[in-house]
Image (tube, rainbow, N blue to C red; front, side):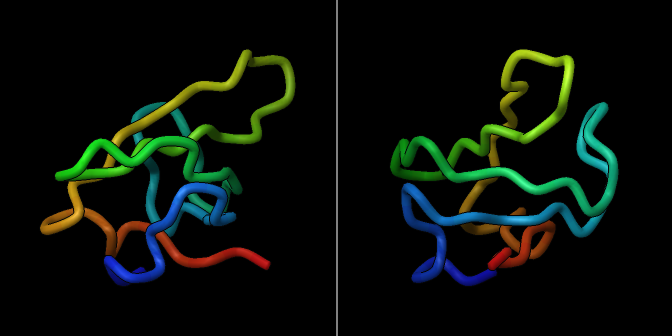
Length: 66
């Protein structure tokens, strides 16, 4: 994912295991805090776990999900 694609409301998919989030899990960017973005993951049975991604170093862990 590029910085230009990393916008609030964009659906994404994890390309790697992130914390306790399995590879392939979908989510949505729900916050942009300048140097990074926050993703709320779609995980049944878990109340919206969130992870942040640095725009310079970590966006390659995500891809756009349609």
